[in-house]
Image (cartoon, rainbow, N blue to C red; front, side):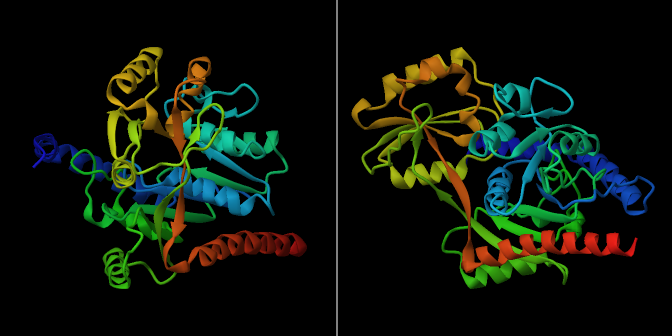
Length: 366
């Protein structure tokens, strides 16, 4: 047994009274929104929300990127995030010279990989959306990143993510558990995606998880696993495949690095790790420590430093120090199991198509 895990779980149980108080506040807040005492605003264009009920990594950013990829050939999508841990406040639109300190790491990741779409941040999405549409009037669909529990805006389509090994149905409110919203809020979702599943998830496991979540009749459940791509150098972009004899230093500041660690365990000879808090802002001293550990622990001929796409954007400010450092980014993406990727994509595109059709009919009636 990991003593630290045991101690942490025991400590969180002692915080149960705070969880109950927090849960009551969340339940009352949702009740007020459900009864229209607190108002939600719906905008006159397709708005897709990607979110979860718990803190921690369920794969929201890769799902936003998945949506960008399937939509941008036929549409002009924009993403809107809060911009967690950025050094600015209010609304901001990514552009030339923008850094992760300006908009946050995940939005910076979207902008770096998809500079042809609008990437914006704003704590108050109800204020940020009109500003975004003013700046980019060609936008015809907005993807809200991590906004499921922010009910001031009423999306037209909700995608809720939950991790296979930590289903929201088996969780409890913070701080005893990881829930930041009541699990009955899942009823607002149009699609529920169980993420980070084993790639060989069986039909029986699929049915058991579906029964546990117990979706409404109008809700659909999909299952995804993580696909890792070929690592590429953070500056040059040169690819270098992982080999069974590689030694790796893993540097990560993400909420849930366990799947990544498992992948390196299975695909390399050995790996060392330096873990930081989620959204950690790297300093030059961190970079010196990383370089020192790589030089002292890892065999140079077969060695490399691996980090995530989200962490990488927080290293780029040190680009002058990274040219010769073997720091590689390991990309990830969702892969739908049971060959249901095309069905998921059809659901998204049908929502947008039907939304436009409905609006056109309403304009004709006027």
